[in-house]
Length: 419
Image (spheres, rainbow, N blue to C red):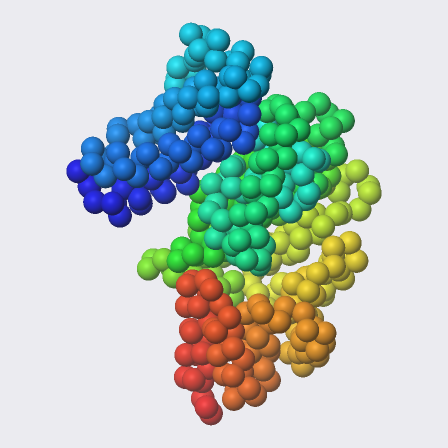
């Protein structure tokens, strides 16, 4: 027997690693993504009770899948009188596949890919597609999705509920769509994979990097380029590979984040850098120019090949950010562009651009703007103003890991000569 907290941690750990496989297998079995997600959640609820009294089973993912399958059978029987589709399934229960068949390794990639494309169906608005896929594929909680979107938790919950109802009402099949339809949904799919990776590479919780999420996003990006070898798919894969290459140096032995300028570049994954650069070359091979993901990958390549921060090709980074602002304008892109200008032309030039963003009222609730402003003010020797900006950034920052980074910045500022 284990206590309730241990059981909850065990359930959460299994769900983090296996949610896509479990929901995908159940969706393949039921042909109904909303039902599959519902019964998977019911299995999680049962696990919280059962595992706390009986202990964690030897094969926890299979346990969840078995319970989810039973709940699906119950749902078939309940709905048989109202829907001929479920009546047919209820009549065929004697031919139910076993857990081993549902977890067929040859079907896992197709299951996860079908999950993404089904959740990204055009019947759903874009925000709902992304939220639902993050929920059912990545296993993110509504809190984590809300932080990724910078919206209230209730908004995410409502989007997911409406999305599942819309899929059920439209009787969207659980399947990888035909090529022409895949092209229509590719943009949403890429944005989902990108957000999953973002949550993994800069996790919003206490852990600085969640490699399970980031690795899943890279894996999905590789699957996508095999299935849909479009330039932006290659651009996204390049971006993820080049960013993930820095993971080995991004945390210290105590699990604390290490900033880019302090990282031991000898620890970067050179194989991932080579893969990323190869994917970036394929993204530009069509001659149509790089899209938003390809441009971000090109910026990441500048960092990947530079011997140090000081020796980075900042002038090229500035040019790439200018192009990115044209194709995908956003306040965050402008803020990053301002940092690049500061590195290329000095902190005063960067601060002018940051102040312009602040004057427009953009990123008003984010910690990013005061954090960048504090850094530039510190470099200009305006330490009192920098401290005030760091304090403002700390008030707004929800990430424990990022709070740690900001506090270290304040400590370095206080320890600097002349303070």
